[in-house]
Image (cartoon, rainbow, N blue to C red; front, top):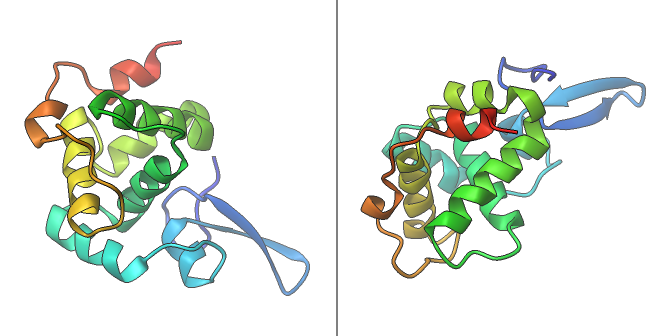
Length: 144
């Protein structure tokens, strides 16, 4: 896993600088460079209010947006797990932990903040208590 050339967060986008040199960028810096389309101002506000880093919020926004179907809390959680595995492979657990996304409750807090901001659609029956379980994301991400 490569790190962003502008900060230490995981890179999610590679671009050419000056036409020849590859630059690796995290979500936030990729949006600032207009390489990704995301509502950065709204996500910054969510980050400040929810207490999770901008890149963690943007990852969740992307994970939910890319999901084929979200009908319940389990679908939201599995969308995050699938997206983490696809995006960060064996570093998934480390990346999510670095962003403070450790349990399904963390997923719930961020998801509900995205809903409240109008950035993703609400899911019937998806309250914060519905995300509460005994396992951590690390338990699931470590499983084959």
